[in-house]
Image 1 (spheres, rainbow, N blue to C red):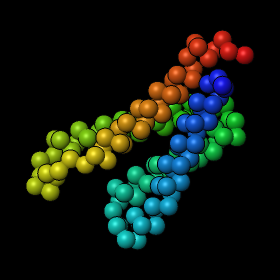
Image 2 (cartoon, helix red, strand yellow):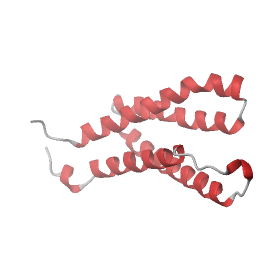
Image 3 (cartoon, rainbow, N blue to C red):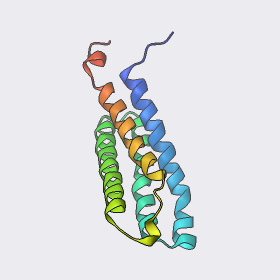
Length: 127
């Protein structure tokens, strides 16, 4: 049975960021040419940064973990702002709550918690 290490947790987070960023990169043509929605384009471009951070973490950049924490914290704050604006904005078009908001909130929370856990004292004592 293998032991969980700080590096394995960070590689998991790197993979998650890379997958999410790559998925967003594939959505950019749709956002530009079909949806023509500026908010979606900005969201896709912001999310694509996760691909770059994930790749940097894979190749072993020491600053990439710090950038990942900053990126995830910004993603969490943006998701909270969107949810707040959704509930404050009263419009007949905004009558249904989308479960995507919950996913957009939980993903950065979980990944940020994993990164924080990888920096915990438990892993500092490991060889």
